[in-house]
Amino acid sequence: MAQNPEKHAATKLTRTEFAVVRAYVQGMRPVDIANRYLLDPDADESLSESQAIQRILSLRDRAVQFARQHNQPEIAAMFEALRARSDVGMTRRVDALSSLEQLGQGYPQPQHEVSLWFKPSLARRLQAANLRQIADLTALANRRGSSWWRTVPRIGQQSAEIITNWLIRQRRPMGESAIRPYVLPPSAHAHRPALVPLPLGPDMPYPVPLESMLAPAPKTVAGAALAADLAFVQDWLQARAPNTRSSYRREAERLLLWSAGCGKDLGRLEAKDLELYEAFLADPQPSSFWCGPSGPRDKMHWRPLEGPLSGGSVAAALRVIRALLQAMNKAGHRARPLAVAQRTARAPVIPTGPTLAPSDIAAFLEWLGDSGASAQHRAARAVAMLIHDVDMRLTELAGLRCACLQVTEQAKGLKRPGSRQRQVTLDTATWRALQAHWADRGWATAIPPAQAALLAPAVLPATARGRKKRLARDAAGYSASGLDQLLRRLWRGFCDVRGLTSEGFSPTKLRVREPDGD
Image 1 (cartoon, helix red, strand yellow):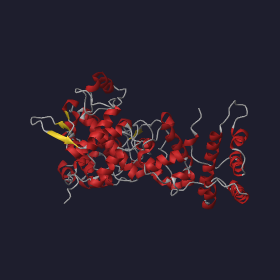
Image 2 (cartoon, helix red, strand yellow):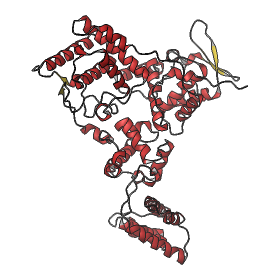
Image 3 (cartoon, one colour):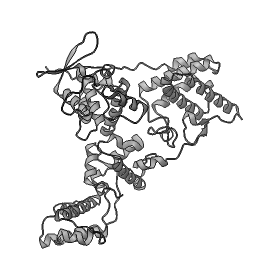
Image 4 (tube, helix red, strand yellow):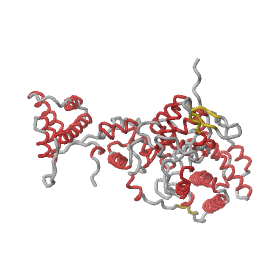
C-alpha cells in the first residue's frame, strides 16, 4: 500500500519531476503536463485542472525546499512567486532550475529547520509541538526512545514510521547529533532482538534486569559471593508485598549491577561505597551503559536508568537499599555493621511544597487544551483544572458522580462529598473543560446521567480491568492512581515538547494559585 506522499521527507526531485516544474515555468498547460509526466500511461486515469495544478505546486514546494537546503534563498524566492509569465522571468527560472538540477542531494544538519526536510503538513505538526529544528527532533527521540512520537500531538504511527526511518538514514551525516541505536520505527518493535541473559559480574558487556541475571560460576570467592547475593535478593523480593515488589526490584537490581561492576559483593559494602553509589545515582556514568529510555525488560537496549535521579528519587532509592542491607544483616549475610550503612544512607529531607510557577501551570493547561489534543489530553485538562481551581484531591475526584453537579442559570457547581457537603462554584473554563471531556464520552449536548462517573476514560483498553469497567458502563470512572498516572504521563510529554525537566512533578503541584492582584 502506497504511503501518503504528503508525509514523506523531502529529497531531491527526480529528472521527471524537474521536467514537470520546468514545463510549468515555460507556460505549458497544467493538464497537458500532468498527462505527459505524472500519469501512468497504462492506467485509466485523468486529472482535472485544479488537481493537476495541486500536484505541480507540490513539486514546486519541494524545489523550494531543495534550494533552501543548499542555501539558495534567491532561487527559493523565485519559485515561491511562480506567477509571472514574461520571457525574462521564464528564462531566469529555467536557468535557476537547471542549476538546481546539477546540485547533489544535500545532508541535514542539526540546526536545520524541519520545514527544510519534511512536507509542509508534517512540518507544521512538528513545529506546533515546538520541534522546530532537526536537533529538537533527535533530542526528543533519544530521550524518549522508540515511543517518542506518542508525546507529539497529531503524530500517528504512520508519520512516526516515516520520520524515524528518515532519522535512521541520517545517522552517518549527523554524527554525534544522530539518534541512538535503540530508537526504532514502530514496525521494527516486533523484530527487536531479545535480551540474552548474562552472569552477574564486572565484565558484563551490557546490563540485564534481575530476572536475566545468571549466578556466576563459584570458581572464585568473588563469584561465590555474587551468586549468594543474587540468591538472597531474589528471596528477599519474593517475600515483599506485590504492590512494592516492582519498585524494590528496580533498586535492588541497580545496586547488584553497580556493586558487581565495582568488583564487590553486597556483604562487603562500606560507608564510602554507599557514598559513591549515592553520587552514581545522581550522575550515572558511563551513561551509554547505564541510561536509556524505558522499554521491555526482555529486549536489548534495556537500561536500569533513564537518566540522573533527582534528590528525592535518590533519597527514596537509598531507603530501599537500607531496608535490603538491614535484612541481609539480620540474616547474617553481611560482613559489615549496618549502623554505618544506615547513617550514610540517610538522605536530607527534600521539601515537598509546591514549586510550579503559575505560568508553567497555565502553559500546561493550554497545551492540554490544544486543538489537536486527544481525549486523554482533554480528560487530564479537566482533572488539572479541578485540582488547580477548586483545590480538589485525586481521591476525592475519583469518587465523584455526576449527581454531585449543581447546575442553575446563574452558576455551575458541584457538591463535594463528606460530612460537610460543601458546594463549590466552577468557573467557565473548568465547566467547558468538563463538557469537552463528557463529549468524548458521548454526551455532547447534555449533562451525563446522575450515576455516571464525573471523570472516566473515553476508551477502555482490552484488558481485564478494562473489560470489568466496560461491564460497569457509565459508573466506571478513573481511580485515584489512574488519574495520577494520567497527569504524570502527560506532564512528561509536555516537558519533552517544551524542553523542560519533568523531575519532581506530582499532581498536588497543580494546586498552586496565582497571587491576587492589588
